[in-house]
Image (cartoon, rainbow over all chains, first blue to last red; front, top):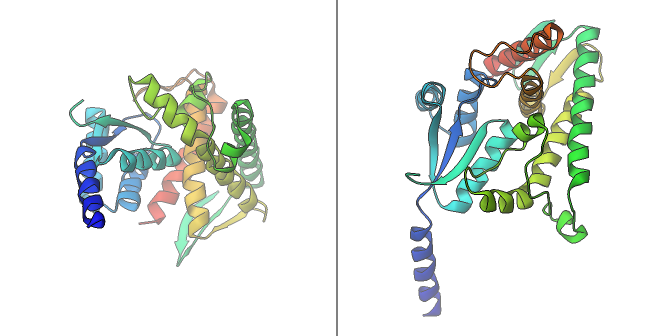
Length: 94
Length: 170
């Protein structure tokens, strides 16, 4: 019984935690093939999707590359900083 | 230099002695910068053992600020909190990557990398290029630098080296 209640609470929490995004910003340093490689190897994107996101960053100056819970987005941003990409976390739509 | 190419799980390149010495020196300088940054942090010993307890504000040096950027834009409090929890770990991993690059240059001119070595090289070459770009004041697409030709050559060479490394990963 208490187990079920806990599950419900966790579920509600994770729903409330959804609207966060990881944004990657354009910079003049990182190579296009490197950025595309990072999106493929880290996020597991297909070559096409990785290229699309890379070009979005390049042309629009930024792209949302992931969305979900805040902690997960913080992990993604830390990983992007490991790769030397410029990334930030924001609430969806901000 | 013979750029990177792939042979099964291994990736190899051949650098000239000068190239090898220059890259190793750059990597050592970056280790110094990163360690200085870590040493400035107000570390609580217990938290440090967990890899947290780092600085609360971004570095003043633009090069270091680019290596260790804020995770939140326009929210100083959230950025500061995140930095205290993550910066020391990030610095530590960047130092490890630099040391791995230095170690792989120890065997003379032939550089042979396993998959872990490839990851260290990719990240470290990026870190070096970010630092050089900050010194050259390359801030936007199309910027051509401050006119320091020697540094610009170095920056371009590292870019070429990294480009061939990414390419041979397929």
